[in-house]
Image 1: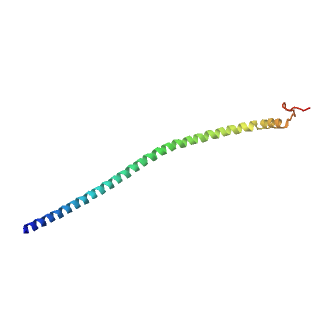
Image 2 (image 1 turned 90 degrees about the vertical axis):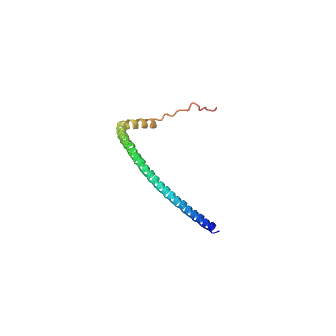
Image 3 (image 1 turned 135 degrees about the vertical axis):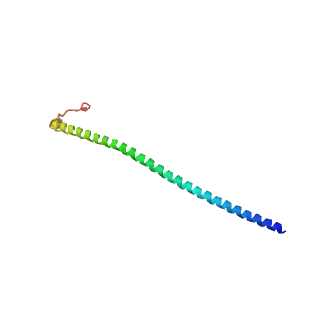
Length: 118
């Protein structure tokens, strides 16, 4: 009986050591998993920063060309405005005279659809 008790004790000790080894293995696994997650996060952040930098460069290039287009359009608009103002000054008196002539030159007429009863 003593050997059975001793065998049981050895089995219990072996089971306890196995449980400790499993526990340590789980802790190591969790630690490695945590390190892998941290490394992946760092890599993701680095990638995002790189892509953001590339985007800013492309955006600046696009806006730079857009800015020059905008100045060209502004310049053309100013030129056209100057031309239109010149035409306005040249033709203002003539247009006003024609307009006043049309408004003031009234010639009363009977409308063609008007019928006198009787």
